[in-house]
Image (cartoon, rainbow, N blue to C red; front, side):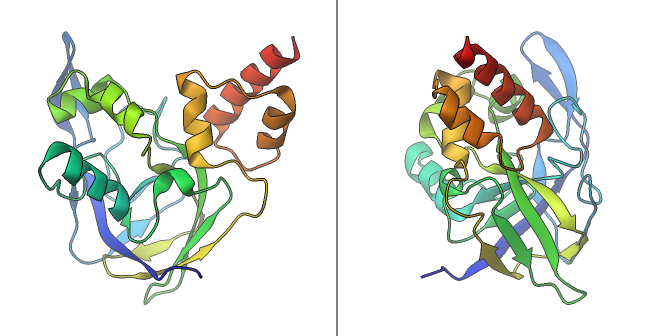
Length: 221
């Protein structure tokens, strides 16, 4: 039975100074819930600052999704309730765990001005910026161990979204790689060539596709 889904929060971040290791940086990772409606474009949400465009933003990673069950895990692990946007996500979705999502899954947000359609493209890989934002130099490793990466989204149909909007989930189909499986590729997993060839059949984000292709070339020898 398909769960009833909704957007619990929509978040954007403004440029904020952040000390990352030994360098000063500017980042939009510190996101906060937005009241009312937010315009979704093909490359990002309106008002959302994206500084590191090598790893964030663009058509294949226009929005970053986290889920309420994933946040429940952090409440239990950290002993505190994190506000929406703490982990740098744009959208918080009820009802699903991010690792179980598959590339090609579609999320249709039913908005007053017309539906907005997102497509799952890649997992988020933790970095030093996330650790610095959380005030814990080991948090990237903690995040990796939790295997609750959240998912990047492609925008197939722009529009506006707001907290409380209902969401319809359309699965990609059998054989699509899960976000958890793709996340594992960055932490030592080495699927065989046949499995990696199967991954390449799905609408991976461009950066992820390049990484999978490299692993596939290595697996083929």
